[in-house]
Length: 66
Length: 272
Ligand SMILES: [Zn+2]
Image 1 (tube, each protein chain N blue to C red):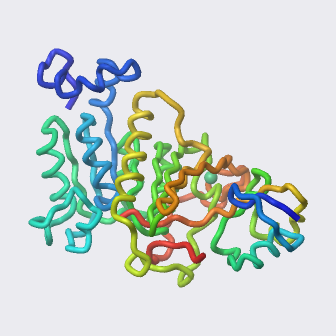
Image 2: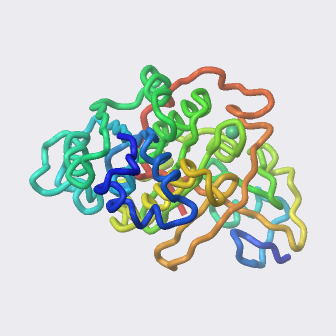
Image 3: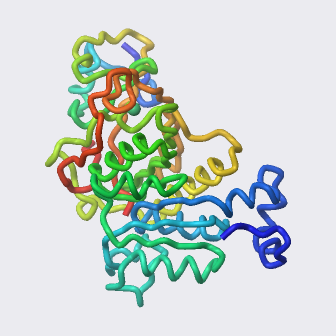
């Protein structure tokens, strides 16, 4: 299945957003996830089914400034 | 100090602004009346303070509790080698006044806390986030929401940076995207992670431009979109976001109804 992750088209395995996160070795606590332009709550990651052509944004925390 | 259109010194000093149709004499006057608070006189605060001063901002507030350290000088360009050991707000104030004596500088040699944030932020028109910890970034986000003050958020780490402008109650806030700071222990410290010094200039000057646009009421703000900069690839990317009805702060059923501080934490982050 091909989905767009952070603007890049990628071939992924996994049927939910949570499975894709795990496959990419990203802890759900470390990102905010936008799915087809809508923010997902953490408890929705496992229940959100991904289809061909979906767009996922993993938004990482960006700290620092000093 | 207010811009005086008949002052030759000021007309000349700001001539490249006044020439712009978006600024003109009126806009320069608005800039001269504006009160901007920079939280953190460090990496992002340095270029912000310099360019806001150069632009003729009426009053610049600076809050920082630290003293200048040798390791700051790689990126915190408002501080110089002879300033080591000096309070950052005093060091920054001296540079601002040397650049533009028309600017009034208010220094607060303190840490922004749950106790002082609302009072302090309430005294300014616009807030620039130049802090380096997540609890502080969330505190500023929340305080600006309660005080209804526009906030220009910025972050830098390693080779990456981000800018995001927030009009509290109107556009997405930090908590619309990230409910809370990352879990303690899951993050690398700034000292461990490092940062390219020039990133502070890129991000801090974009923040400053947002401040000027806010003052002038011109252009399109970085609201409801995150601007992420990847210096390794020299690539900017915009991520559209929206006000989240389930935001714990500005959503329809807010859980956060008063200002509080998250546990102090190390700065930084991105584990992948
Ligand atoms: Zn919000």
